[in-house]
Image (cartoon, rainbow, N blue to C red; front, side):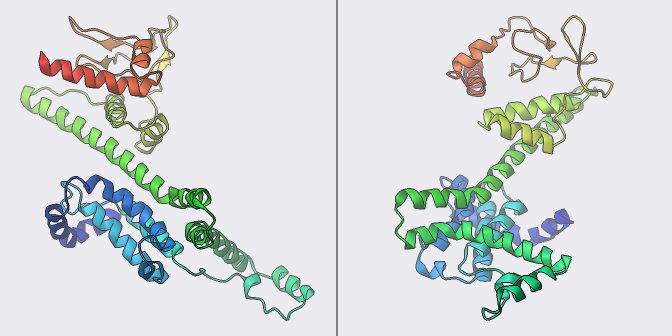
Length: 330
């Protein structure tokens, strides 16, 4: 359903994307989605002007939601496509960060003149539905308090450290949403590139080459490592794509043979074009079958880690960069 709605929306978003692509400088395009992610908190704190800070909740939600949508459409090659989750996240943050409180719990709605015994009796007689509603309102008000904290800290002159801490905490949900979406997009692009290369190979040779999840998994890991995503983000993205488990040829989970060699059911990692090996039992176990060619050179894990100053992922990125530079000179 979401896909159908986005497809219908492209009638409007495609022309807007073409205009934004022309008027927005290429140098700032990559930063716009992240600015849109933190804008609701900045706006509510007064950093973008008191006029914006005083917007009502619904106007703020619309403003920041449209801002996030514009940031998506301004990206190079958008063609009207956009990610819905960051747009909804920015709109929700704008609504909750705006001044005011959402809803009133039963306890908050009790008149002050009531004595304590009456109040306790009313609260005790609430239905499950009313209790659930009160719990939801309390949760929303907690998020509101967090998102409104930077502005309150600024107004109360609590100092740079306290204000910065409140701001960092407030923007973390929308920033995390943005980073997660970027990771998913990177992984999806790697899968699309892999499938396109596979289709091109079959078209040129007339041969069908088996595509499996192990190869797709390796393509995603290589692309995300090159994109400097952390191990945790890579693992979470593989899980979302259903590629978190390395599979054998028979569809079972990868097993270890008695001799310590990883049993891939006749499948090996195809590293004839070079590449990082993210699987295996442990370093120096020599348990990953890999397909190599004459005159190729394999680095040890210690060498990769050394290239990254102790960081294995940074080392892999540098190895890829070095390989690409040297191949260009050959």
